[in-house]
Length: 623
Image 1 (cartoon, rainbow, N blue to C red):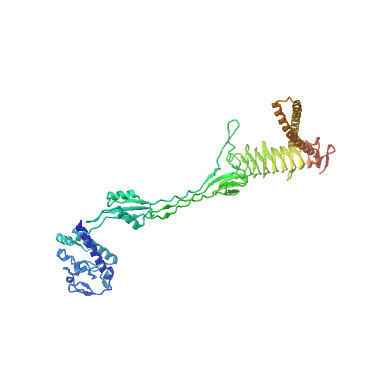
Image 2 (tube, one colour):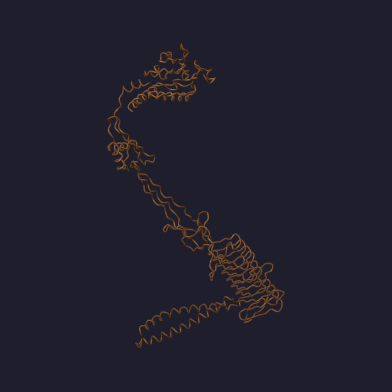
């Protein structure tokens, strides 16, 4: 081992000296060449090959296989300092550059055409020289042939005897990872009489590197104690940062429509009630937002802070009619309607739109806002809306109930089962075989065989403008083109009174009667218990009963007063039947007109006429 170390040391010095003396540029074509007596070339007239210790001449690369001709004289020229163009293959004459090759006198091509080729040849030469110094037989292959260089045993002994192995203490080599979060250490043993590794040596190496955090003292001590030379181990680790948690959204409503069939009273399933609408009120919580958290910084092995990453804020799904509450970190609805999710945001729609028909693909609709149906409403289905209902197609035997208006662009074929209910107005092209209950006005082109209750005015316009068959109650006025038909179909009309008004009066009368009886009983009990109190014979339970009755009496008296006010308003409406009027262009026989407590049957066709109540009877006037 000592011998090889010495050889490597000499070899490294030799190569450094040679590197300083030789470069590819020095062998370029700017140098002028002169011919030698042997036919070779030399730089600046530097003599022939014999003057440089070469027995073979310029064409032979200075290698003849004779070991004595390769004496280690230390002269760099002996190992390839000759820079003649033929020796390094750098023939620069114009003819050779055109031909691309040049031949030496021995018939071999020793020219290197580029700097890269020269470097490759130089590398091969150095490898060969290293093998010679180690006493190994080596062969250098190139395009021209093979030369065998051998360093004999005698020469090796001479080299090794001239030098001794130097003393060197053990040392620690430290390697820091690119992210500065880990330190690896390898211990190298001593040479000669050098000292073995110690804790102080390692600490000195760590201090020199500036490593001061996360050192595994036990690991370092074990490696030193066990003299773990030439073994790589991690001896320090930084503290990684803790990144902040990302924020997230907790939804209180599904983002995709989910079918939930309603159950019937008999335990069955109502497949027409799919509950696809998410009705919300103002102030309902849509979702809860969890904010991102702050990171915790770490530290690298040099004691420098390592910044953590902040948590990311989730996209806030705030859409139309959705408000953010920073105090609660929640999204709230700004109004009533249908809660939907589209384009990554929640929205509250005041209008629920159906692009096709209301059928088994949609089911029954129950919505807190308005409903727009672009198709038809099929038989057996229902549409309930707190707002308006608009249907672009036909309504068959369905049930429509609106807190606002109902607008049917075509009309309704009720099939004796269709029902329309509206707190506002009803407007349709036609209404057939259905029941209609409207608080305000009705406007249509014609109504056939239907039960109609209108809280204000009924107007039939258009080409036909006819009311044919059925029963029609209108509280105020009725303006039509025709009532009845030439076939004398029975058509009943009631003005100044509606079925709802009659029901309201009846219910109010019953409630007043019951409340009056209750007040009578309360006053009777109060009188009796008050007498017992004066006599001093009242029991504790009777005393509690008396106190309770004295509280109930004024409450029931107030209720009775309100009911009597409502009864008075209804009576006033009944007395206003004189304002009710039927105006028609044609009234056919079979028509029966009721106004107040009076009744008139039409026995012959009446044209351009009107009917009204005056002085306790129904009178006919001019339209």
